[in-house]
Image 1 (cartoon, rainbow, N blue to C red):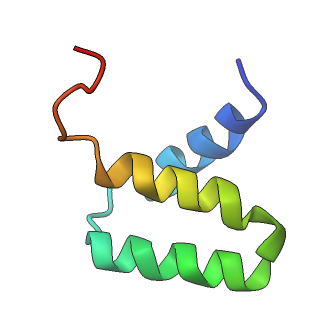
Image 2 (cartoon, rainbow, N blue to C red; image 1 turned 180 degrees about the vertical axis):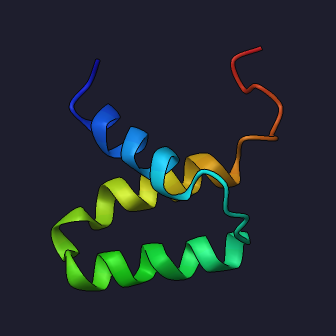
Length: 60
């Protein structure tokens, strides 16, 4: 188990029943980076990964 799994588990436990839009999530990510600019690169990578999930696998 990675250290981040605890935060992911807390998110699922506390908010797992909620429905959110991607616009809402994008705004929360912007707020997080505004408050924690040192995490800009990892948040950018996560957002890019999420945005491209439906793209065809580039490795094939």
